Image (cartoon, rainbow, N blue to C red; front, side, top):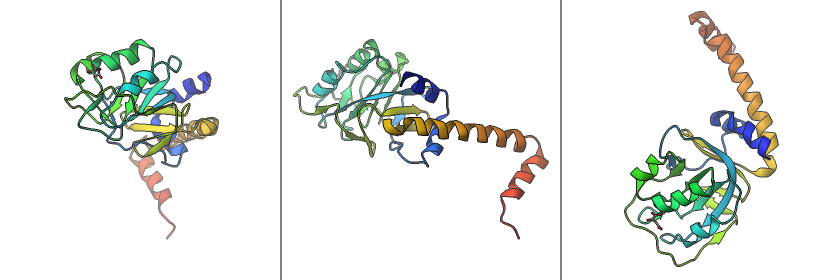
Length: 206
Ligand SMILES: O=C([O-])CC(=O)C(=O)O
């Protein structure tokens, strides 16, 4: 799996999306806190009720370095699922990044960490620590079902989910698409004539 993840990391997210017919990306309201962030790794999943992040902390005990912590926070925007301390824990434990359909607080110090967090933005209030929720179960995040171990790939374009049983097939299709894009750019993006010829060939026969 590690080799496969390394290869997927080297391919553009848009090619991977094309390889999946444009399906299975999270709602684009879930954005990286900095545009340059890129993540690729297997999901550790956690589901928390809006406003309670106890299980986020518990979930961090599982997983291997490089895994992505994916939080189903029910789209909560009033209370944060994490602040700079909880995100600092994720980084210290070696997670490859955090993705959530929820909000963080302490956004400026989280940005200073240069650690990839993808979420709905920032709020002021912290979470309670009551302990409801579930760890490493299928979750819904940004409108997509994510199973533990699925591969999460994300950058400034968005975050997409590759079901783990389809990972090899998606990688192969994404590599093929990347090569096709290269060939197309090399033939069409050369000069005006080549660009016009490309468009002409796309038009239906008269
Ligand atoms: O402790 C929390 O739940 C949230 C917080 O303020 C932090 O992570 O810094």
